[in-house]
Image 1 (spheres, rainbow, N blue to C red):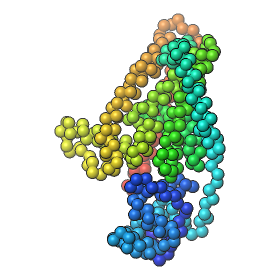
Image 2 (cartoon, one colour):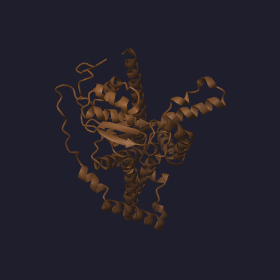
Image 3 (spheres, rainbow, N blue to C red):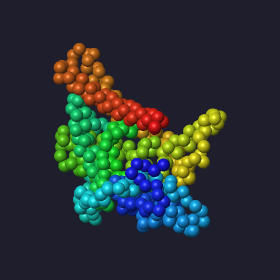
Image 4 (cartoon, rainbow, N blue to C red):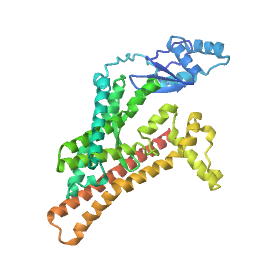
Length: 400
């Protein structure tokens, strides 16, 4: 059924917005860069859209398709999909004018040969400093740089904000150097609060150009760790200890990218290299199928023929990386943050039971506990909110 304002007449050409076409293996990505709306078409479907964009009417495009491929195409479905994707310009709708992408020059400068040379020298300097003084190697013990736990939490939290911002800015700049806009939002991954940069426009560039925007945040983390280590080697006392604590927390955030049960930067890189559609979901379902077969619960098996063939092939080995990701996550917690967190929490609670703590110690313990468990509660609230929105969306879809 034609949408209001749309014509369903086969002899009327469609007014399509400027579209980009990206051939990627046996698929063609078609989309609008101004709205970042993209869809994947088979090569014959992409050629059909090209005909429509060149001015052919739906009837003419159908005739061309039948002469070219020997069968009649359902052009009406294609036209309806183009409307839903926002590719068709409605009557009276002005042609969008694509403005310049802000910070594009800065993005090019941030990843120029001179910048890469500077990053390499910084990392090399930090490595030499650690070799000369092994005490500069960040460790979990560096987190406790003060007897006041609330101060530790506040300092690391306040410092983490600009460091996370730098990580996301590098993602954005690496995309903007290609003329791609970006959006940033707060979300969660497992029990971690995260900030995400959306680069939907990467779907419109060739695959090899997507790798740097995906890995740019990790590049920033490595450089930040090196700068913190260098600073700790140049200064002494509390400032040096704070720098090592910052370096360690940044290193832990870098390790998060290897938690392969999450959709991290490493996951996005793997799916981009392989050309996957939804590898995470496929891998989880394949792992569940293996467990259900092992337990003899064949009634719970998912039909694997419904999965995208690229995802299915990759999931055969990637699904084994999911438990490895959990192992890395657990090891990171037990080795790094966990012991320090538990020790500080236990010491804070003990201050309320000894009867000999000063008001300063009690205030410090109270603030530490509120800040620590407040972050966990906020992450749980975000997770519950997103799950509720998802359920409402499904309910709305069913009712509609």
